[in-house]
Image (cartoon, rainbow, N blue to C red; front, side, top):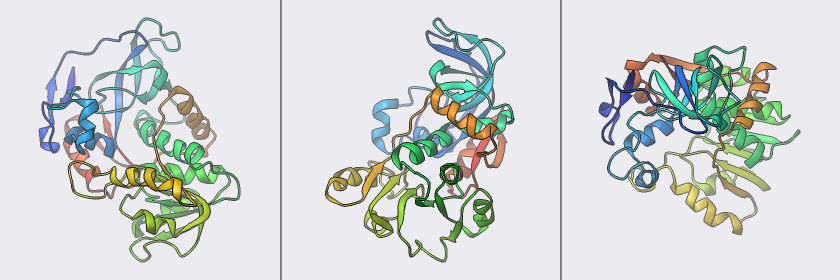
Length: 321
């Protein structure tokens, strides 16, 4: 089969298109013929092995999995022992291993039937970012009707979903994003939109701040929270170091949170069939839709990751396979 492979950590130049043997579904696993795969910053971290703690789980000297990619949408071609929720021919979406390929393996408990009103490319843009936003809004932020919510990075991959989910939960949503994304974020359900190139942060107080931007200090973010508000930290790219890049604020938030009024919550996203089913309900009811910035062919995976790395994509980027 065709796949994007890498034999060492590094920039996008380490990726190459190659012919490899297709994987085989083991117990509890599903083999999926991939029709499309999403691209997000997490793929960049696993490709580069940065920050270094990433390598503890994914290979110290080289990637344990040669084929990158997590998001997928496609058709089931085989199921492993113990899988009865899916059968060959089913259209599915979710997260797997090595999805930048013609075929990929996924755990059955991280797949769900593809929403009927989405194409494969649209569906592939949902799993990682959509479940991250769902966890931020529902579990970490505990957003309820009437709350005032600020989404930082509202025009990005996670931000576009967070705006829609917070709006669906009945919150008053303010979206902070670049000038070119203001109309989109307003259309997604934001009650107010703010251009970050003109205003660093709005001069208001919020019950929940969901920060997907990752470059503001904790002290600055606490200034726009109510005394009992919640700050949800979704990733982050602060710093240029190789040890804690993207994780330094999360560690400081864990240390500081017990001693301040607001809750500071480093997000740990949850991937599951149940979460995907919740997202499907929102999608098929018209409350949630993926926003696609660009699509690339499988052979253009390196270019797709470079595009995401620049940090200005509107919504999600996907590969068509």
